[in-house]
Length: 404
Ligand code: UDP
Image 1 (tube, rainbow, N blue to C red):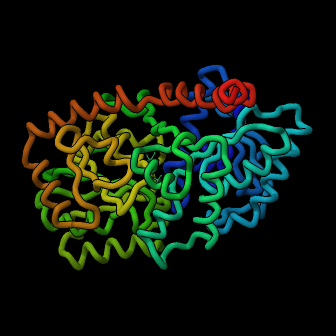
Image 2 (cartoon, rainbow, N blue to C red):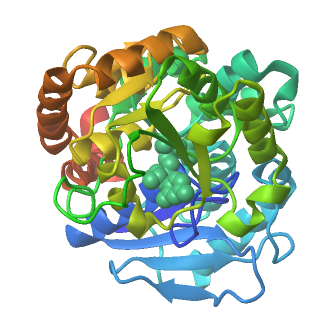
Image 3 (cartoon, rainbow, N blue to C red):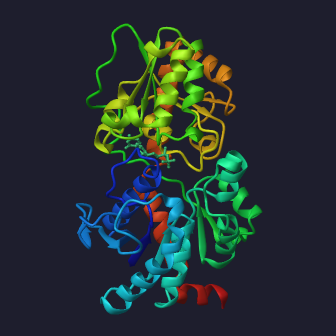
């Protein structure tokens, strides 16, 4: 099949850890590569956000990344991209009509991509599959006035739920949200993200440890909803351990990043500054070595549509303490591969981390179970096969057979 992925802000080629570059980038890169490995012809359309980018890049995975000129060729916050989705759609449709390559299916990632995909796909009669990655209704609930998404986001997501041919949910919690938004249950299929088992595994180098301290690692885009503040607060209850925070801007720019400074000031005020360390953005290829260096990986988000970092830790055989929210309630099996605690509760979080650090036998048992679960349930080839079947189901011929 010819598969067009639309990922307006999240390029599979981007460096990760910044405010708008994280799980969606990894997801689109890995899923596209796994589909290409099954023999499909995959092209990812993403916005050209730098004048230095070539029109197209053929990645080692065999996937072609197309840089779509829509809006200025410079980095823009994702919340500023909506006005450029019309140009994105028109340019993509033109390419498909004139460029000798037209998709059998268009798979959109994130709500704005969905808007562009529907408009572009209509010109070539291709079905549209939508993965939201995150939902505006959930963001609004948790972030309230801090939510900088365009005001029309929730309405647009509601409309997409009723219009696209199929919605891919990443976890059971998302299914319930989608149904609340008006998505017909029959059009929702759950296909979780995977983890690259060749990259993330227990064998291989580990980042050196700090002498005399156990290591609690937490990873993500440096934004409040990832719960880094809660982890710093929890460290008061975890003596003899350091907290390493991976993510954010490159290390050299951390000092000028307001949220990074806030976390360090908080650590100082709480008397744990000597045990809290921010390392800034880490290249994707170096992430396994960081996970392997940890005794426990903590993921303490307020909410989480899927959450790749705990899964990556599990694939490296590291036990996880996570908030009991969203996708984490599917991936982390409480009391088996890790511990789940209520979100935004540093006391419970600290108690759980300390309990696990003090219990070597339980860590060993969690580690084995986590590795096993990641390998059995969350591989990209398996996810790609399920999506391949789904793409076939939404082909016009297949839909007619089903309807007839
Ligand atoms: N990541 C990375 N370097 C960093 C920080 C994060 O490569 O400095 C990667 C991390 O390994 C994971 C992704 O970014 O693959 C974050 O995904 P997650 O689903 O946890 O969060 P999201 O960004 O989707 O909110």
